[in-house]
Amino acid sequence: MILPDETPIVAYKIVKSSNQFIYAEDSKIYKRKGDAIKRRDCLNTLEDCTDYKVVGAYGWVEVDD
Image 1 (cartoon, rainbow, N blue to C red):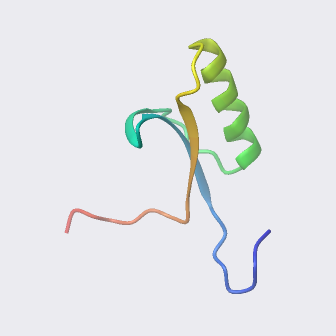
Image 2: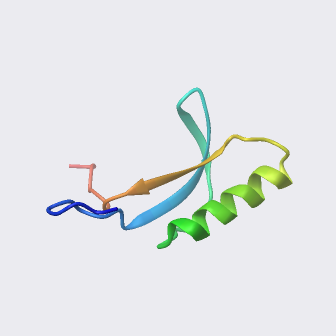
Image 3: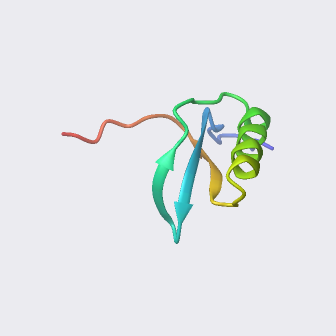
């Protein structure tokens, strides 16, 4: 649910993490949370693990300056 004056999440990615450290990611960016969750479930099943997580972003920020 999006509250008034709240920015919605606009991008989702699948990352593989352990102890809050991201060490791999799926190359695709998803616009719909449901699609990202399906892909996460597929990757976790293929690798027989639960390391893949869905993360969301409000947008991209340039950080090299």
